[in-house]
Every structure is written in structure tokens, then in C-alpha cells.
Image 1 (cartoon, rainbow, N blue to C red):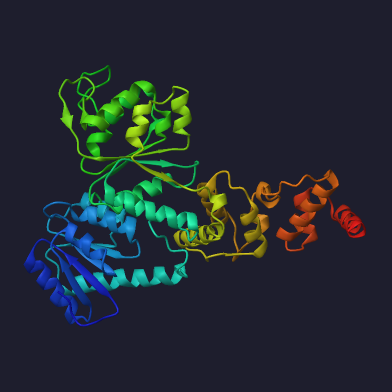
Image 2 (cartoon, rainbow, N blue to C red):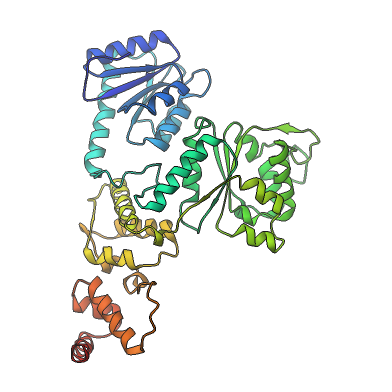
Length: 449
């Protein structure tokens, strides 16, 4: 259903046709555009085709609940606001709804005035947030947190979309900090499993002796301390996606059990002889070369082939060109908005330093640097003096020409002056010399040049 055109479009999601009709009528009377969906799956399908400013959703509905819809919206279209309504009010429900992203929580029955006040409040917050963020469009993520316009990222986005449609096992490779979990989440939330759980597991972070029971669960009395039966990560991900991060760190004994699950889609809880069928999708990730591990006998070849049905490689940040600046701006806006401070600008010297730096920690390193600067520094600009020393003095890594020590020193001085925008006092501080010594070196460079 739709009403006359307005500056705000509201989607009403409720399994009750009467409730949808009453809320829609009130919205239309208040000059909003009203659209409806009877369940979460229909709503998600609708959101893929039309832009919506606000969603009003019931909490309890047949199939996926309103909470699953809130999670989907906040993962994929975070600029859209959500109001939760329910006839079964609890403090826990309200806290959960607000925690995962709902702006308002209304208890049935509510008056027309209460509904419209909640709608106007949510839309006002949305307007303020957009004004404060100042997005220019380029830095808006294609998927949640995945920002980029480079050719390598366009290829990655295409691979994500294909993987989401295929529902096959995916192996994501890339250096630490490149965003492999973000890619896994993007695949999950763009797939038909979007309303089911996404369960991330850091395989390297679980002790070897606890890995099997953590993944497959255990029954009461299975081992000392097993005081109750507890489901594992595989059961928790039923119907959805389990993300096995750092899969290359799993011991060979566990690799056998993972291979069996991939072959049979069955698990045995520790201490039980019963077989459980589990329907889910596996997405694995690694920062190691699994083929080399296979050659060394540290990773099973048959498991590698089972995992590597769809292969996705996440490019390192240093190979993404101007994406570095897009990401820096995105993180600056994100953390400035969170802290309620002015969104900072980057000086030319800072941009130059970003583009020259090798980024061994990739996107995670960039995000941490921007976050620290926004929190700790005051002012409307991010200058090179705010950057870590190793970044301020970084020399481009693509220079393979052999040079004398004197030539290297002169290049380093010129580079430092460039990122300091000609400020000799600042450059001398970075170089670890006094201003007089810097002047003398510059004079010699002019004479030799």
C-alpha cells in the first residue's frame, strides 16, 4: 500500500493485516508515504528494490522475528531507521531492540499520537545524523564497512555478489587486517540466509583441547567440568553461516572432523553417539597460504579442496590506491560522529604520507590510527604531526634503483619536507636534527643539485 508522495517513506512490517492497515492509514494522513510487508522475508526482498527511510516492525511474527530484521537493516542499510512495536513488552526485549539498532520501542496498544511522535523523532535523528556525517557519496560502503572504488575492490564486490547467490563453501584469503570477516558478513547478508544467524569463530583463539567441544558442543558428563549439555557453534549457526577465521591454525585432528562435516553435514557432540544433521553454510578465512601448508603436511589436501569451492582474495591496502583516502575519510566521519566532534579534514601532507606508507596492518591499522587521532587530538585538521613517526618518515617501497647513502639521505630529507608542507621546524623534529643542521644540509643539496 502507498499513500501520497512525501519526503519520507515508511515500511510497515506486521503479520496482522489489520495492524498494517491502521498504521498505514495514520501515516498517510500525516503526509508520509506508507508501504507494507507481512513478514521479514517479504520486507528484505522489498528493501532490495526500494529505498526506505524508516521501518516500523512487529517483534513477534511467524518465521524470522523483528529483531532479525533490525540486524539485517543495521548490517546492510544502516542509514534506515527502525521502530519496534510489540504486544508482548519486556524490559529485556526493549533493551535488545535498542541495543541492536532500533530507535524506538512502542508497546501495543499505542495511540495515533504516540506512533506519529515516534516516527517524527526517528526521522529527526536520521536527518541530524546525515547532516553531521556529510557523506559525499564516494565514501559510502558498497557493503557494510567495505569502502572502495579501486579496480581490485570492484572485482571483490562482484565476487561477493556471486558467492552470495551460489550458497557454496567459500575460502577467503588475505593478509591480516584486510577485512576478511567483513567480506564473510557481506556474503551472508546478501544471501538467502540473511535472516538466519551469522556465527564468527576465531579458530586460533580457542585452545586445541577446547576446539572440538566449542564447535560441536558437548553433553553433560562428557568430560570433567561438563555440568550441563551445551550446543556448539555449529548448532548456533543452524540455517545460517558459520565463519571459521584463521582456518589454517586448526590442528590436523580437528581438520578430520571438519572434513567429515563438509562431506556429510553431520556432527557428533562430544560425549554423545547420536548424529545431528545441521544445515548451514561454511565460510572460512586465512592469512596463510594453505597450498604451502598442504605441501608441508600441516593442512589436509582434501579439506583444502572442500573449502576452496569459491575462492575470494581480499587485496592488501597498499595495492588499493586512492581507496586509502576514501577509507581514511570514512573512518574520520564514523568516529567523529560517534564522539560528537567535528569531522576533521586531512592536510595534503597527511594524504601524501598515507599514500606512501606500506600499511603492513592494512585497513585495521588505518582504522586504529584514525580512531586514535579523532579521540585524542583536538582541532579540525589531521596533520602529519598526528601520525606515528614510522608513517611520517616512510619512503616509497617501489623504488628499486640503487643509490648512494648521500642520495638516500637527500631523498629522505626532501620527502620529509614534502609531508611537512615545507615546515622546516617540523621536518627537523621528525628527522631528529636541529633546524640549523637541516638548513646546512639543504644548502649542500642546493650546491650539489
